[in-house]
Image (tube, rainbow, N blue to C red; front, side, top):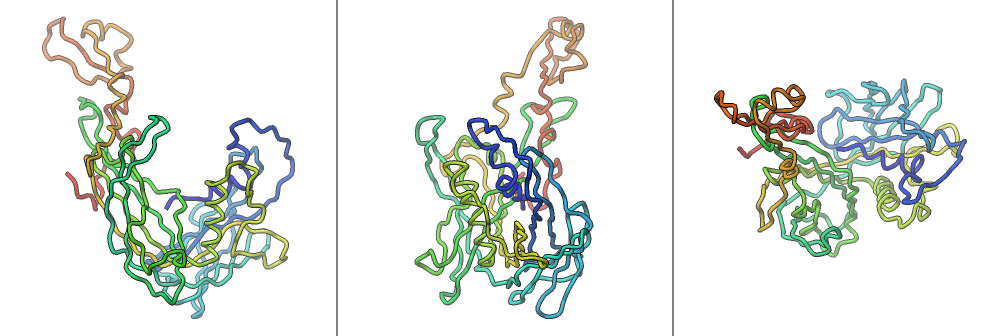
Length: 381
């Protein structure tokens, strides 16, 4: 999943950068507060805990909390000290402590300066199963176009859950889409690439808000005809989590504060929800959460066109980047050696031409993609 604590940093160290009008400030003091993000799941480890510190408003750097002693324990006497694999990133081993439904887990932190922190115990609750993922047609209003435009939703149906229990649900998703360059070339050929991305939306619900004991046609992802990801081929792996109430409150605060504020001065989270506390003094604040989550997941594939919706080709802008020049003029000019040749006419005739571009990404999709290796799960040609 994508790291979502950039949202949290906007709360505590960069909220004012979102203003339309520049906000002049002279803030010299700030609170040096520990920021925690981590969880244990019902899937095999390793599990990761991220530790950092708040920074001043005018700083664009993340301050990692290094050399801490981080431990996860459960109510069955199991415990593991995590290894710092990179600055501020602590991981369990693959064979270490495991997430088991029904058990309680607690996070313990001893920082290098001798301070101690601990989370509330969190229970790893069962998660309702995903029944199906499917597409539905959905129009939406485009302010750019000034009209309704075509689109689709990726929807989720769950199986029924117990009416006697409250469930707090969260969704994340991993997107993969295939890309071809605009033109083949002698230099790069015509090889495809795949881009992999992780959502940074806050998608949460609680079962008590629904009238039935299951979700039906719940929209997780929306695309409009202006989006390009599904053009060649697209896949989304949807994760459905059962989270704890404390974590639900935290993510609700994140969503409301970052997405629903009409102004930066509305609902600023002066004291956001957290289930982690200082063992040395009740007055010290800690931002973040630790949770135990069950997970179910399912994958969906599709490509343009679908349900009558034609998506946008990412490389349409490259049409304006193609230039043509006679071969003699091209090789005598400063373009040779700097531009990328798309094609050139064969033979020695001086009237033959060369097509070229200065945009490498138009003939080499690896410039901005994640990988040029076909993912093992990919179904399309």
